[in-house]
Image (cartoon, rainbow, N blue to C red; front, side, top):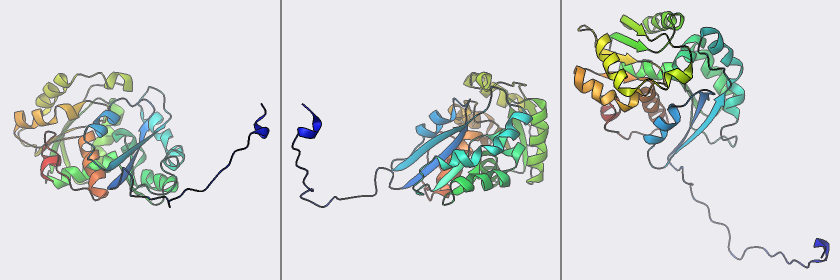
Length: 258
């Protein structure tokens, strides 16, 4: 039977449609990830408070984390950001790569993010780290990374220009994101212990690809001082920018006390 021969009667609803604030009634946060990223989504969703919406998009990059490959991300950020809730309801947008945000510079990154998501508060992983370190009153720090030396050198300059004294930085000399995500949490604990310095106010474990969030509390308890890791700082920053003040225990004093 032809559809044109079917007599369908369409009637308006009896009741007026009712709306509420939706499932994400407290805040909506967007993250621009590297295409190679395999850790941050799990970290963010693990700590997501009830009523907070989390939205992800990805920027193309080869499985090679170098200054050159990261710098090329700048031309992708605006388009990526524009794919996140184009109704304009996104509250916060973050570029979720520590090394990428310091290579490009946080101000430029935020500018590009806001081209695609003009109504959202823009941040980046390096800005989150800087704010987190200042929040815990750290001035002298030691830094552990999975990066190549060329990126470590840029990170020292960036952190020192932000007002910190980097006592030492130690990298694992890994180029591939697919290797960084496989560094074991137990190794990260021992790595953090090995780079600690008596004069350091805090230890910073850099890179969202590392599974540092799983062991940041353990490292703090072992060292007896604050420990900041990239995902922890980013989650804290994005929640606070969105007006979410929930304290989250088990992942270091930054999230449980600030």
